[in-house]
Length: 131
Image 1: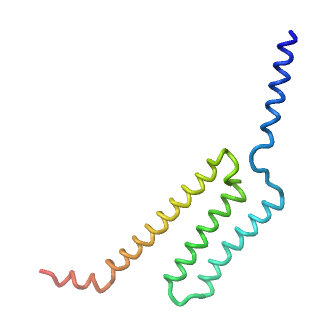
Image 2 (image 1 turned 30 degrees about the vertical axis):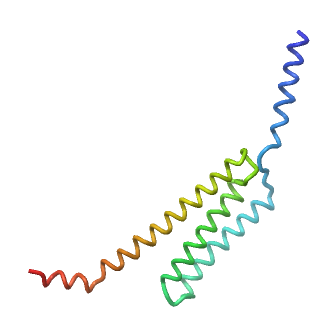
């Protein structure tokens, strides 16, 4: 019976060792993330409503850039992803997410650019004159 009691006691000690692993967030961490998120949302709004840039393409690129930064802010401050937790798997997830964001943003820009070039109003008039 004493071996059974010591086994339970050892298992309890083992469970308490893993309680401190992983990131713990504080009110300050959540507040910092919230403030960064609000700022990263307000800046693109100001770009569009204030007409800060003359070219709309510059505005779009800046909005996409700030959106990518906001994704990283959310992953760090709200999802608690860093290189130390989960044995480094969170860092791998962060890198994978960044790669996907780059592919998605560059692909979206590429599609929008080519649609703009191929769907110009003058192009539609040229097709009406064909036999």
